[in-house]
Length: 246
Image 1: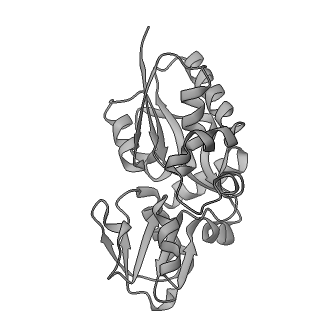
Image 2: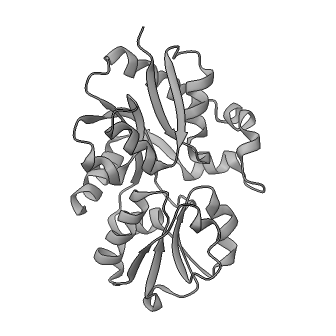
């Protein structure tokens, strides 16, 4: 029996997915690794894994892979964990530092800056881990769990999902499940069943991963109100529009 290698993101927003894979009992021939978003895409592109949760911004690079129907990491309102944090208002920002961990948020903010905000800042790529301690930085894009600890340090906070929705009227998709073209339909069906199990058992997932949840965060509220997991027609529409801008 083939062992299917799966790469997922190691953030709070994927806890239901990870719990479903690990605890549903539906998948019995898998090897799960947890990475930052950019490495999930790289693992699938390089053939190191069979299935991955791929950042939307990396989709154009995935030449021999296809998007799986069913589930995603999306937002239909503010997402809280993909932010532009600034000590200045938008019209005064001259330089924006970019979190190493995600290509999608970097591409999203460049689309927002060009198409909607009409600003032209200097973009500076950060090293891995640098976004966690931005002491001398005026403006930066930060993603993931680190944002919970940073948000109160900056007077100006722009939620990138909320900004996208405000201008386009469409949801935003941050990541989709993708696989190589040789993965059997039966395995894809099992994966979706495991993901559904995790989504419908969010409270159990939170209890299972309690030690990973940042202090003071209402994880259930975040995973219910801020993250939207179904890859429906509206999200596909929003995803297609984002990809067209790229």
